[in-house]
Amino acid sequence: MRRFDGTDLVIATHNRGKLEEIADLLQPFGVKLSANVDHGLPEPEETETSFAGNARIKAQAAAQATGLPALADDSGIEIDGLGGAPGVRTADWAETPQGRDFGMAMERAWTELEAVNAPFPRTARFCCTLVLAWPDGHDEVFAGVMPGQIVWPGRGNQGHGYDPIFQPDGHTQTFGEMDRWEKNRISHRADAFAKLVAGCFA
Image 1 (spheres, rainbow, N blue to C red):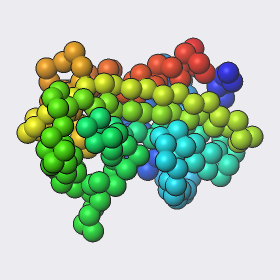
Image 2 (image 1 turned 45 degrees about the horizontal axis):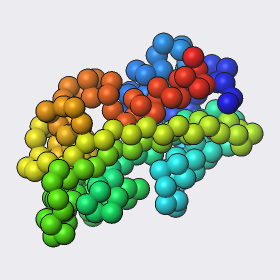
Image 3 (image 1 turned 180 degrees about the vertical axis):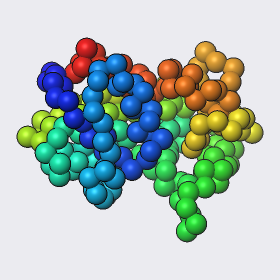
Image 4 (image 1 turned 90 degrees about the vertical axis):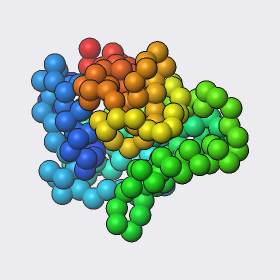
């Protein structure tokens, strides 16, 4: 496994919230972070059918364009009663002509679970795959998971996306009710980051 031994790392995202989350996780290593927007990079089209495939597209594109190592993630929710959907289409379910509407996406998830009479508990998992890519084409892949269940109605207005309807295993609160930084400590992204740090930074 290749170690990260540089000082500059591009986070291949246009999402400032995600950049803040990653900066917090990597803060102990003194890495200088920048994001796609700092380099004028467009969002590449995500054409793969797996989280790893889409994360690799984003990481490799940023590494090639900047000549710096780049870190990308792709994440989403898999709902067992829907055959793993929405999966890599997690954000697509929220797309409207006016922008993303995750309230609509959550309602769709529950409506479809009701339509197939999915058994309780309605198990699901949040998944996050991180890809750390170098300009020479090498990359390392780390996958994290947080298992839980879908609840209805949604609870809480913290977090984002499907957080209000996802109750992680071992907890009575949904992600939407948890403090942001508490959620970040136990999330699928934290799981993937722990593996990344152990493999490439520690």
